[in-house]
Length: 250
Image (cartoon, rainbow, N blue to C red; front, side, top):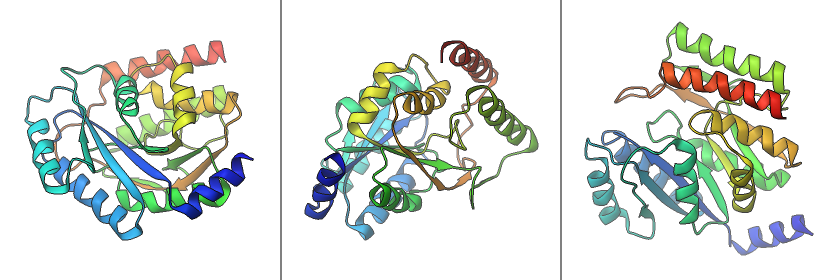
C-alpha cells in the first residue's frame, strides 16, 4: 500500500524536497551552494525549498542568507536562525519542524557536498522506494578530495571500527549527505540521543533497527574551499564516546 501511494504521488508531481542547511560562519560558501541548489532543482523540475538554520554566525552569514532570500524568494529560501551553536542534531530537528516537504535532504553548506548528486538521490529513492538514500564516499565511484593523510586515516578508521562493532549494513556511517522520507526522519530523531557528529552514525544504526530501507549513491566529497573545518579534537573524543555508547546499547 505504501509503495502504491508513493508511486501515485510521484506521478502527480506532489513530492516536495526540503533541503536543510545548518550554517556557522559560511558567508563565503552560502551564495554558491544556494545557487547550485537552485540550478539543479530548476533543471530537474522537482519542487523544493532550502531551509537555512544559522546558529548565530559572527561573520554575517545570516545577512547573506537574507540577501539570497530577496533574490530567490521567501518560498524557496526559508530562514530559521537560532541565537547560538546548539549542535548539529538539534539544527536538523529545528529545520525539520519548519519543513513543508514530504522528503528531507540534509547536507553541509561548505561545498563539500555537491548538489549535482541530489537528482541521483531522488532517482534512486523513486526506483527502489527507499526510506533513506545516503551519499557514500567509500563505495563505487565515491571518494574524498582535498584531505590530508591524517584526516583520511581518521575518517577511514572511524568508519572501519564502526563497521566492525555495529555492522550497520551501510558503507559510510559518518557522512552527512542524505535524503529521508520526512516521517522516517521524524521517527529516527525521536529515537536518537546523540549530538554533533555522532548523530549521523546513530541515525543509520537506528534506521536498521527499525527496519527502514537504505540505498546509497556514490559521491565525491571535497574539502571546504573557504573557512575552517569544524572537526577538532573534541569532536573526535565525542565520536569515540558515542560509538562505545551505541555498541553497548544496540
